[in-house]
Amino acid sequence: MARSPILRKPYVVFSTVGSLKEAKKIASVLVHQKLAACVNVIPNVHSLFRWQGKVDQAQELLLVIKTDFRHLKDLEKNLRKHHSYEVPEIVGWPIAWGSKPYLSWLGESLKS
Image (cartoon, rainbow, N blue to C red):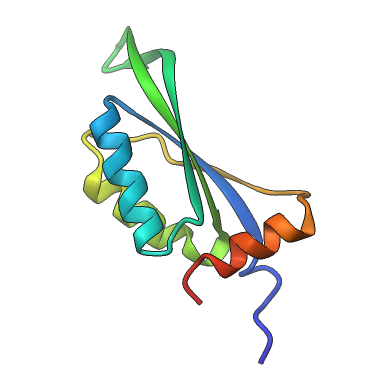
């Protein structure tokens, strides 16, 4: 039986973290559990945000996580489990287009 095209829909999920150690831990968990095909860790992100009624700022790292629709809930659960923030950023967008070989690799790298 073929999988639903909606469930196979590739997604990019963003999350910021406060340290390289935390970024590596989360990336490792997500890739080893096949919830993400790839996690890019982008350093030196300067974030300005409102938190608990005041404006704050932080130096962070950005995680760019490649997954698909069927893994979003488990990805969020595992990300929250290993994340140090009280309210971590976890936002995702469907990938509207990508090269067929890359998207095939992405799908094959995830849990079936």
